[in-house]
Length: 367
Ligand SMILES: Cc1ncc(COP(=O)(O)O)c(C=O)c1O
Image 1 (cartoon, protein in one colour):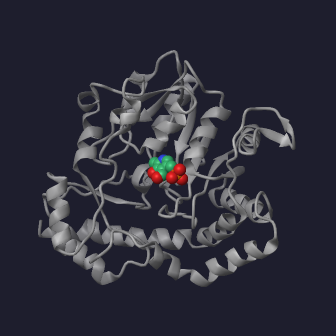
Image 2 (cartoon, rainbow, N blue to C red; image 1 turned 30 degrees about the vertical axis):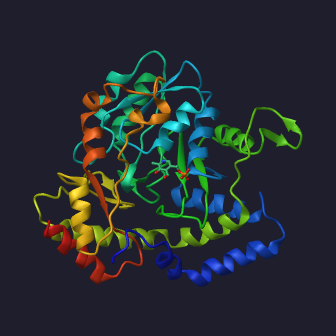
């Protein structure tokens, strides 16, 4: 059976380096807010070409603290894609603000930037694009709209480390960007981790304070903060992952190129990459007529697949009756709902064998 993903195969590619880094952190006697984190923050900021990186303990916290640091709260609205993972929306609702959804595009499966302006009201404070699947949204259009209306841009970069829009790294051309280093992500820790990046030094300082109980100086709590620090062991591991990020992205890009050129079944709609984007294929989403039928077919050919995000946040149980629910969302966000109910992700990961890639292609073509 071809697994949907294999974190172990990925780990084994750089096992010695990971183990050496973790041991260095274990043996240092300093486990929180120490030299490993400081180093990783500098390395990641320098890789992206952004002034500040602040390590946190998850991508969800990165979103929550980015929204909070910008002073967005009750009475404010944030524009977010209707088709995304719930964490993008939790960043808004955790601060008491209201998510205002816009539909996705049926080809790239990303937020439709042409629908943003009609969602802006006098309460709108920010646009929160999500670079889902590893492809960056149309940042040219998004930044133009944000500038025209005086809005912040908060990027959800959980799935797009190393992807680019118009030659610029995702996460570098906005007010603040939020990264997850969940183990499956393009840059993954061996546990939970996340970060925000920004060119605004003051904003970075606010997040730094918020991640550490709201204090810059011990026992002087200037704001109501949280404990959300990226620990030394994960920071050491991430420095290793960062060294190999481009290499691993390129492995997935090569697999995607094979899928794109060799899957030629009209019943399997392949993902479209915008001409201005460099897609790192965190996922390889296809659109099919019947999710369960396609999954069963692939499984019968020995290939495991996954569905990425069958229930859009506007239909989430936790938002029932709240202003984050969109009762008529199935009609208003037609593409997002279509994607949620027709998307299947094919296996794509570094360490995947050539014969497994060939077997996935053969199975998809036989549907
Ligand atoms: C688009 C998106 N945003 C945010 C997150 C949250 O990241 P984390 O799991 O590190 O909290 C994820 C994680 O799966 C994600 O896919």
